[in-house]
Amino acid sequence: MQEALTNAVRHTRSGRIRVRVGPAADLVRIEVVNEGVGFVVPVAGRGLVGMRKRARLEGGSFDAGPVGGGFRVLATLPARPDGIT
Image (cartoon, rainbow, N blue to C red; front, side):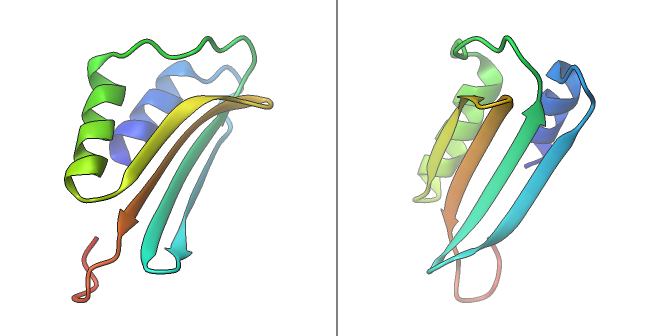
């Protein structure tokens, strides 16, 4: 989430960023959306590639790209029994 927020701050035009973290069945869903227009499909850079690798290593999924009115990073990670994600 920290890296997604850093990227959102760097690339947002309006300064508005929405963060949502919550449970989804036996997963934790993390979503960071920054407002703006004119986003291009992301080029595989170190930031997105690194976030994708970390999510997959934990058994989760990762998606990033333009959405209506902004750019979204979405990760789902398995919730561990000990409460640590």
